[in-house]
Image (cartoon, rainbow, N blue to C red; front, side, top):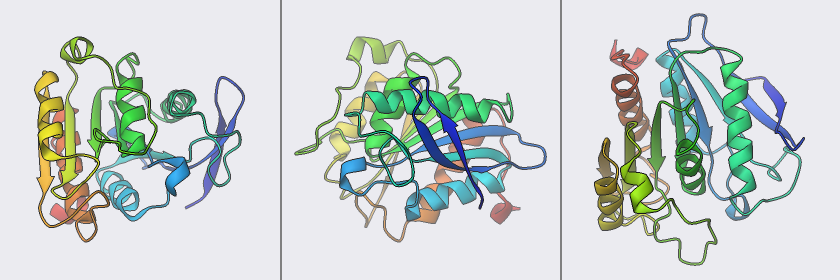
Length: 222
């Protein structure tokens, strides 16, 4: 898949992969795991999500945060990466004005939720393995509970039952503060969702179709 580049508002050049169907029904931006722990757009769970959403005729943008692989700049502690996501949303909006999903995995989930809180271009959010128990990983705090309770857009929280960064009680506690949320826990896997990538992607695709008012099956379901 050909790669593209786009720039942030502070002039950092980021690399991305953009999949554009002939007649997109929606758009999606994918955010990867922690830049200092091997995270990039090129991970099996993100490949599976890209394939699923593309099959559903989403315009899908997956990008590398600043300082990762071919992207310019340096790691921004999770705060500057919100600017990267904002720019990515703007870039995919150049292709279509259809409803927009933001999906983040791990570190990317932290960035996705914080950006969505104030970015009205985002219509629905998927948080895969959000680092609610970050342990030794430094992350910006999530919004306060009072702010989360005012966030009315649909949110899916998804994790493996053995995810040490997203324990089920913490996932369910976060979901309880979000007025329009649902939880999906996959048994027999962990933070990386090994061997469950396609099932997780299908769950995300179904959620996105309903949340964005599409209710359209993927190619594998037709």
